[in-house]
Image (tube, rainbow, N blue to C red; front, side, top):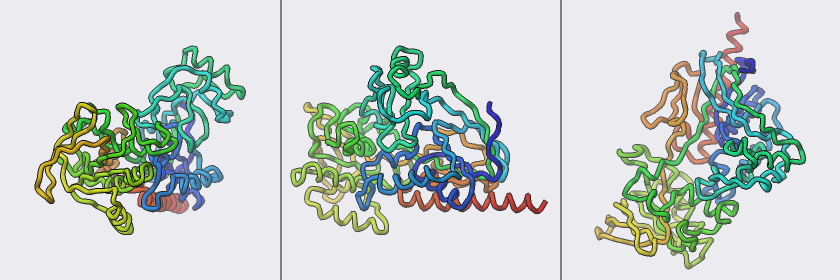
Length: 428
């Protein structure tokens, strides 16, 4: 283990998505020393994987790119990627945090030229494409990666591919001797910006996500629509690569359900409304989007966005909780249920079905300190000693805009904690 770094005046931010980046920047620009840790190889989280935001339909480069530039230019922030929290001890104003840093096998000399990727032959499931595509075992996470450095997958270490990658690098950036490292840091306050993960659609058995190739999730569809995604932005069916022009969107896939997620995930309705725009942009008047819903939940200024979608002749709404999905002989998903507005049964075939899966807190897969308080769904409420707090969608289902607001509030709370710590120490 390396020696301890930082002090009890340092703010630790766990999670490098849009919330973690925001919290780190807000605290750092107030003059506080911040350590931002992210367990993946790049910052940006799920926001970086979006095609567009709602309601303005702008791309993640709008906002996220600016924040990454601010982060790069701020000396008060230390960024540690591939770093995972192993344990937290201590108390408000004086935490000791143990981190595990996994090897990237690529050092800071990397220029992101891509020669290492060209040299290797092995492929892995692309971790940033939700399993929709493969990538070389030497890869750049995505176009907005920060830091802009390649990664070697551990599966090729000790193989000929690793040696090929090292031989291809003209900058001596491949370091095959990297090992796991454990670091202990001190912090006065901790912000948990651990984000969310899509609910496992395979658990919703009647929808056949794990049986039917043409039933996908909303996060997967977002990648299909993205020009940088697995299909170059074309809306193609996974089963046969044909264009999907007639698409069904099923709301509350796992949310508001005692058998799955009890809470409303809040962003799902807006995500589907946004994604109908992708279908229309791809096919014009030939597009056909059908939204199956219990009710549509949009709030504040987002109501206008909903009204515009309602006026789109290529989009129709069916008020129904889909009972089950079957598949016909052509591989088309067939939706079965009852339209509660006309009280008639339907069995409707579509080219593709998109499940608007709910938001589950990422904390469900992370070992949190015993002091952390969680709500019934696993979202972070804070800590018993008030020295730790949550930010963004780690605290509740939130869209990007509200996640940023939550992260700013979390930064202010953390600043108060370390300020009170310094005041107490100064009075001694």
